[in-house]
Length: 334
Ligand code: AFP
Image 1 (tube, helix red, strand yellow):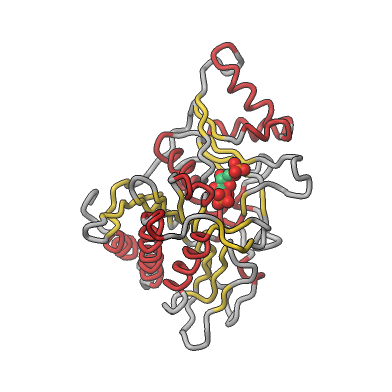
Image 2: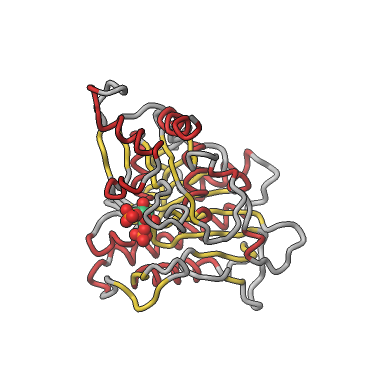
C-alpha cells in the first residue's frame, strides 16, 4: 500500500475495519486535505502572491497576524464551512467560534484549527504548517457554543497536521496509530508514504528556545543543564539541539528520528501559563505523539487530560521520545 494508497483509499479501508463508522469522518478528512492543498499552494507562491509580511490586525492572543495567517484561515474555513460534516469550527486566529450559516446543513463534528502555525517563518522561507483537532459535538446540541469545544484531548476523534516544507506532508491519527501522506503535486493527491510512524523511545536531541533560559523553572533548568554537560555530565552522552520556532516542523522531526520538544512555562510574562495553545496546538500534537509511542506532558500533567477552561487557553508543553519526557516529568515531581 505504501506509495500507492491515496488518503481517501486509506481512510475507506480504515472505515471498513470499524464497521460502526459511516464514512462521515472520511469525507471530513477529504475536506481537510483539500483545504491543506489550497494552503500549500498559497504558501508555495511566496513573494509572487504579494502576501508576505504583517497584516494590520492582531488575534485574540494580541499577536500581530501575518497576511498569510488571515488568508490561510479563510481558505481553511471556506473549504469546510459548507460541507455538512461540522456543527461549528474554532480557529486560533478568530476570537469567537465560527458558526455554520443557516443555509448549510450541520454535521456531528467540531473542528479546532491553527491554519498557519509557525507563521513567523513565512518571510524567511522556512517550514510552516496547519494543525487540526476533531471532536464530537455533544449529543443534543444544535447550536454549539465555545463550552461545547472545551473537551479534554482524550476525547479527540482525530487529529493531524500538514507540514509545508520541501514536501507537503499530511500526518494523521484517528486513534489507531499515526500515518503520513505526501502530496503528489502532479496528480493532486496525498499518497501514503509513512505508515505506522513510531517515535524512538530514547533520543539525544532536544528542542527549546534557550533565549528564555533565565526565566525557566528549576526542573527545566536542570534537564537542559544535564543535556548540555554531555559525556562529562550525569547523562554520559552528548546531545544535539534544534529550534525551528515552528511546532509542526519540530514535531515532524521528532516523528522521524525522535527527540524532545519543550515550550515550558516561564516567568518572563508571569500571567502567561505557557506559550502554546491547548486546543489548537498541544492537544492535537499530543494525540499524534502518544499514538506514535511518545509522551506529552505539561511537566505536571498529561496534556490530553486537561479540562480546558477557555478555547484560547495556553499551557506548557513537553513532548516527544518517551524516556526523555518521563525524565523531565520526574524532575517536576521530585
Ligand atoms: P507563530 O505561529 O506566531 O510563528 O508561533 C509559532 C509557535 O506557536 C510554535 O509553532 C513555535 O514552537 C513557537 O511558537 C515559537 O515561539 P518562539 O518564537 O518564542 O521561539
